[in-house]
Length: 74
Image (tube, rainbow, N blue to C red; front, top):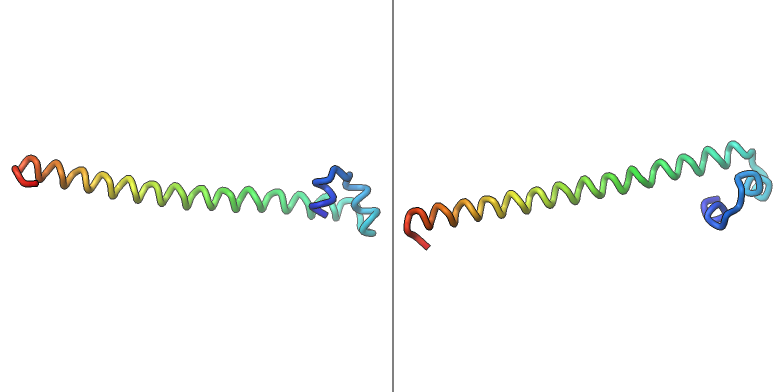
């Protein structure tokens, strides 16, 4: 269904070709559209978590270096 829709076929034509009700085709395709963005959102959240961890590591390293300099150690 998805590939037919991507080729520009109407819901009605897809339904006729597959022997389905047009609302079945519509609901199925709309359900898929809602799932994909959620997966993308989860990936983005995971990336943001990883970035935050990296930033926190950099902050800790920066703090340690500043403390060493303040204490005259390198």
